[in-house]
Length: 203
Ligand code: NI
Image 1 (cartoon, rainbow, N blue to C red):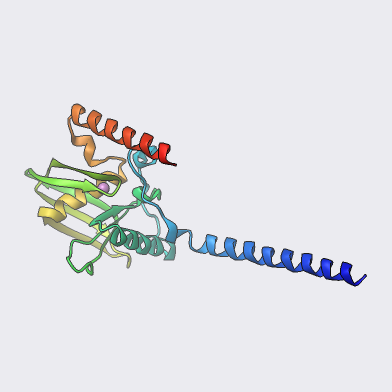
Image 2 (cartoon, rainbow, N blue to C red):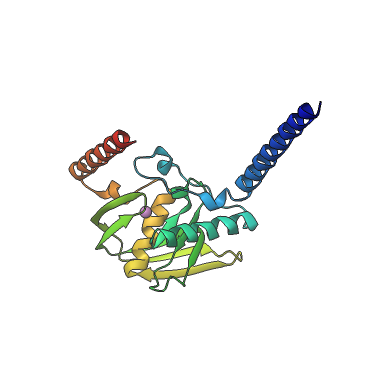
């Protein structure tokens, strides 16, 4: 009788703990869903989705922007669009400062004027280890909303102009490699396919 009781108690305790564990897991899973955002890599078709305008700047949008900045800094990027973390909303984060302490958060950014053209070597967190010279407008005028719901109109040239054009492209499902010649894109695709096959072999 005693043995049975102990056995019974043991089972209950185990079940109790496993229940607590799964509850905790679900609890943290639901609440930290944003913290485990992943950057999508080319050729993931989700990078081709067109992001929708943010209707209301609420705590959720602020949380997304904060988490996007965290990921961008963690990956040593200078810009990130929500599309790249599979959130189809028009949110962009940029920080060109060396100290990584001047974040620029653009909600519903829109380019209103493109002037001239220039070239710059670009890379992208969604196309790791690939860089190429891309031609874009040299000077832009643009507007966006801040997280405080303020409408800002501004202008930029140099790296900031390039970065804003690159990130807004992401929101429209476009990647910098789309500007490359067909031959270069085919070569890149082959290289990526090869890497994927190698990765599958090592798994
Ligand atoms: Ni990019």
